[in-house]
Length: 185
Image 1: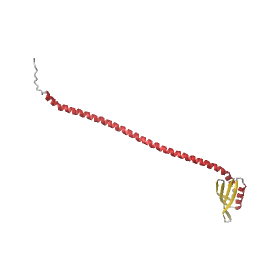
Image 2: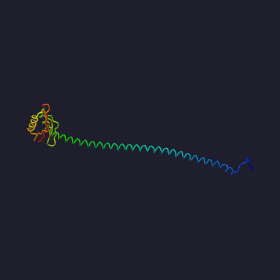
Image 3: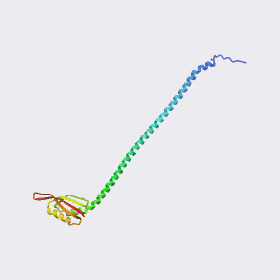
Image 4: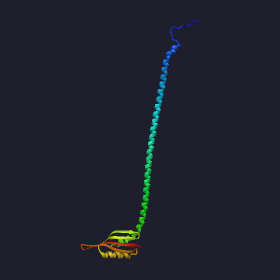
């Protein structure tokens, strides 16, 4: 049998392993470092995605808050408009009631207007309930007496009375301030 003889000197196995340990240890450290860096990279990517999701949710929250504020403002506007409608309804009811009251006085007013001579000027005509009052100025006392008698002759007035508040004469022209109090039937 022939035996092989190795002419190249070799280190024993223990020494070879001993020489390989720093390389193996370095490789392991390098492998752990690569795994660690890749894990950090994955975590950074996930954090960036989470930051984007948080920003999107915050934006949606801001939009929801703005919409909530707008809805509250619109509700307030709607309440204001409803109150305005209610006020207008009350005003319309009041005006309708006033219109009904005005119809009551339209005939006496038209009769008074048709009876007024040119020498008499009315400053104010007012009615309260069934009583009324005319205030004005007359240039002739006889026209004033005629007006009172004409009003007494109408069946729409119960009582008509005249009171003279001021009588003055300027440049041969008489001016009489008067008040006529009347009662409606």
